Amino acid sequence: MKSKKVFPAKLSGSVKVPGDKSISQRIAMLASLADGTSKVTGYLNGEDARSTLSAMEQMGAKAEFRDDALYITGVAGQLQQSDDPLDMGNSGTGTRLLAGLVAGAGVEVSMIGDESLSSRPMGRIRQPLELMGAHIGLTGKRGTLPMMITGGKLQGIGYLLPMASAQVKSCVLLAGLFAEGKTTVIEPRPTRDHTEKLFQALGIPIKINGLEVSIEGYGQGGPRFKARNFVVPGDFSSAAFWIAAIAARPDAELLLENVGLNPRRTALLDVMKRMGANIEVTVAEGRGDPYGTIKVRGAKLNGTVIEGDEIPNLIDELPVIAVAGALAEGKTEIRDAAELRVKESDRISEVVKNLQRFGVEVEELEDGMIISGPTNLKTPDVAINSHGDHRIAMSIAILNSFSDGAITIDNVGCVDTSYPEFWQHMEQLGGKAE
Ligand code: S3P
Image 1 (cartoon, rainbow, N blue to C red):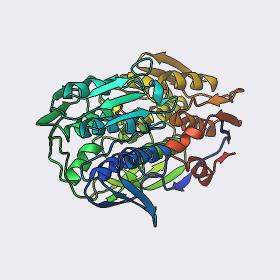
Image 2: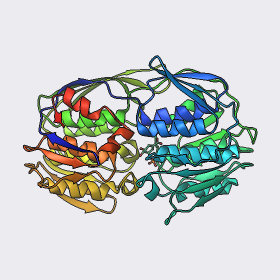
Image 3: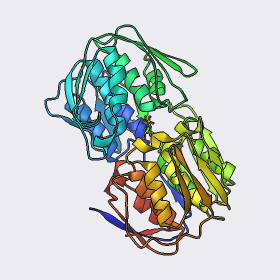
Image 4: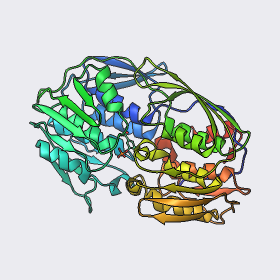
């Protein structure tokens, strides 16, 4: 098991965060389905993005890294059967989105994953995919992996999502590509729309009307669209660790360039501004998802309330927002975030437990937590275990940069799923981890 000893530090400066995980994985799937070869610049070199790409190669796509870019040659709508299971590693996005694609493509495939992924609920995709006509076998104990998908001959459906989930929405839309007739999904709250944006960029007929998204299926023969070039912006969710770290430290400064700024991903910036941080954003348009520059100047932060429609827009950032809450003056309340309990770990319980180890006053709620700050952090005398959750490992490393002793974080290999350069970047900003 890989561990890191992390030291307190005043972080400040500039780093280049790696490519967006959500966008990279969607591009791997769509470029693999396209007709011809796509050049992808900025593809995330992390395990989740790699396992999704390998799964596509197992089903007939060709992928090659050459001269700092990834070249994917697609199967022109015709995925091939894979006799070996697709090993999705830690990737919930890869698993759920690919299940939709495979169900539509009419191949029979099984999917497996690591311990964390094998404990995450898959019934949420089984329901709509079976309504469309696929068969999804979940042989794990509680509606979990391993999953056997037998697809083909899907019918379009109208589906009201029972939870705000971009993964479930995208799963249904990808299956809808192969369905007869129209597929419509209606989401209860706005979630990230990278799938919709990529469909538009590829000329796939999609209609968006508020929270309702429809696609006209191509039928069982599969979608036909041409390969194209893609540029993946830096991952805002990776940038979030440095944004929170610098925002909460008076006088520290941060410059991040080429970061994804899709408005359905960036609510963390609103939260940090509400808490009192100085943040300046410059947006560039014109290559799919908006991207740009973020400048942060740290300040003394105040608590805030985070709930409702804001939650899906910062769902992956909540662990590090809780860290900022521990350092802020007054109460920080997180509500409506029960989805956190089914992420790579139960992030409500893990965050609460770990904050308490640093002496933070925090109350656990069924759907969030209430943190009372500011905290004079005490250095935990036990090692912290990430339990295989990359965002828990990175959030704790950020929290400890504000303490006055070194801590050990166990089980940090998971950081490589989304941000392999995290420790190196921490050192670049003046931190120390060994
Ligand atoms: C993702 C959507 C979110 C997010 C995950 C990536 C995506 O999950 O937490 O890290 O790429 O669509 P849900 O849509 O299940 O909330």
